[in-house]
Length: 501
Image 1 (cartoon, rainbow, N blue to C red):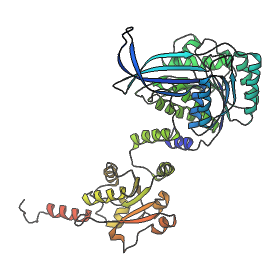
Image 2: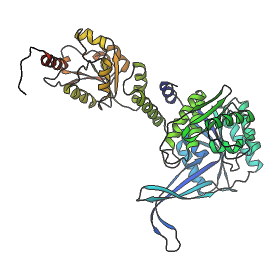
Image 3: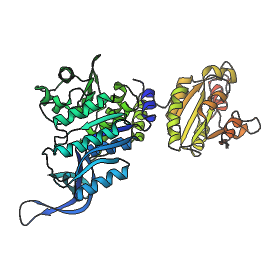
């Protein structure tokens, strides 16, 4: 799949609405310096330095969905307690619709408190987790209120997500009621299932996303290889009458099974810091991309990227569109470098503009690179964030300089320019002048040498008509490709005079 397609999809997600039902939790982290052993017992003593709170379970998915720019309506239960107040306030602050969250006196807000030791005040090590929860089913009246809240949001949502941690919210009959309502409304239903042997309550959903361990438990055999994943995903899809199955395979990526067959989608290996929340991020990205109209392959590629970024962070952390875009761009550049064609360059520059970065353009032959070129390109970098160099092709150099030029072909010249830190992109053009390329790049700043002051800068009118500016760069005396070539010719001339060193 082309990186341009992924970039186009992730940058055009819009703001679809996700209807999210499931187990909403509060994750809390208590950080403390591990200074000594207690005199009362052989245990560590932590001096608390800070506390952090964030959403877990379905609340984590909601935060991920909202960070990706989508809207999210939440359906679930919270306790009438301090943790419930905290979680509700967090969700409201991020923009979630919390009208479907019931506050109950009969159970606590599900919470997971993690005690984290800090070595040398910065190296984190989780020491203990304390859970508070009630996993008993709700009353029939409470379930009825949740179904009413779900149906209220169903009509104007684009996709439905069920996040199940086996905490009592998604009882089998309730789960089926939600799935059937969504199917009648023709809404895709994405499921993040819990660890368990019986997934029958998810029958009829669109997509299910178990991890390797959850899949192994559900199908009754260990999923260790890609072949195991193929077999397991086909079994789950047939058994549960699903449109698709996505088995997440940690460092091996994911396996997708549809009616067309199965395929493995690998991911880039990561330095895993903490896997907490990776599944939530995968579900959120799948949901938002699906809601935005992306195909399953595209949605899963983006989910792989988002999940990979998340595991490099500590705890439950969101991943932004900008982070995903940067990851896509960095992957592409690792393959192709800075040298781009005009079409792909436009896509990347559109992203830079969205970051309010200034685009600088200059052009030239850059044949026989010398110090004057280097100083000139450094000058370009001083006038913006992104420097694009339009490089005359070999054919256009011959038109401008004559049949003996260029000395170095366009591929060598482009590679040398791309190796410079002050150059961000290089694009080769065939025309004798760069006007068409300038109109494609739409730079904020157009740079040319001072020697163009009287000749007239090509593209000036276009750039200035768009509110941009033209800057003339000082030239380094005695430095040019022509002078360098003439010097080399004199050295190589057999009739040349002998010079002392």
